[in-house]
Amino acid sequence: RQMELDLHDAIANGELHLMFQPLFNLGEGRVSAFEALLRWNHPVRGLVSPVDFIPLAEDTGLILPIGEWVIREACRAAMRWPDHVRVAVNVSAVQFRNPGLNAVVLQALGESGLAPQRLELEITESLFIENVEGVLASLHSLRAMGVRVALDDFGTGYSSLSYLRAFPFDKIKIDRSFIIDLMSSKGATAIIKSITTLADALGMETTAEGVENEGQLDILREQGCSQIQGFYFSKPLVEADVAALFLPGG
Ligand code: G
Ligand code: G
Ligand code: MN
Ligand code: NA
Image (cartoon, rainbow, N blue to C red; front, side, top):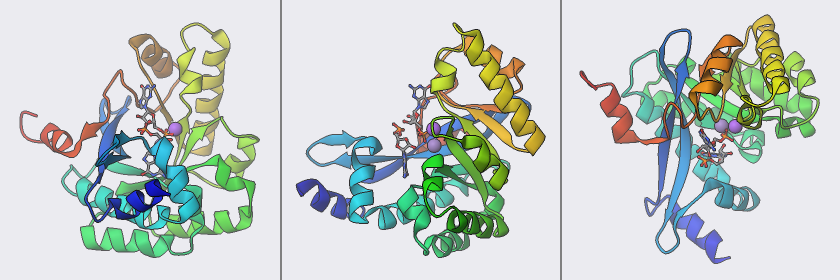
């Protein structure tokens, strides 16, 4: 209960901020996007992970103002980056199912001036458990605005293939659990290969999440993965450090 009251005030008190983790495009040899990752600096508890407060935010409906804040902040930040660099935002199921999401996205794009193609929304398979028709309709209307959509944590849900057939995602983010044992398991490499082959055939990009070493990177490159994201390339950065990367000599 106290946490809920605290979270209610978190935006107004300026306790939320975004970190940005780069996605490195292997074909282009450069950073092509940053994923915005929400942080809550609680006045007493210190840094609270989204894993610990997003569920509370979803149960209380606070995810709507918080999610709106994230989208607006992410668009504003991305305006300071080069045109080819996108920003990816995690959108929770409750937020996605809210009919106001389209208006929130439109307003964030409008007030920041960010081109819609530079905003990528990351959704998870859990959205497809219920009201698939409604979810598909929302996805199509976001797509019609020019916004990109990525399927996050791919492979952790069930019957993932049917979602790929039902909706043309721009990108599949391969869950970290498939990257972890890439060096020790032939099966893991085969799975990556089949995902990248499928994605290619469907015209989708692939991002490998949680890449932590060069051995994993080599296998992912060999298997035709489009982008890598993970501590091996970079941890999540504060906004000022991202901006500094794009200054001359940065
Ligand atoms: O960076 P990391 O430990 O913080 O992220 C933990 C989890 O929180 C991940 O599953 C990530 O997708 C989720 N997450 C991070 N930022 C956001 C956000 O802005 N909105 C939502 N809904 N989830 C987020
Ligand atoms: O669920 P989602 O993919 O949105 O969550 C991203 C999460 O993965 C964040 O918590 C982020 O901090 C974390 N993360 C990013 N790179 C790595 C990595 O290389 N290793 C590990 N263990 N976690 C990572
Ligand atoms: Mn994500
Ligand atoms: Na993920």
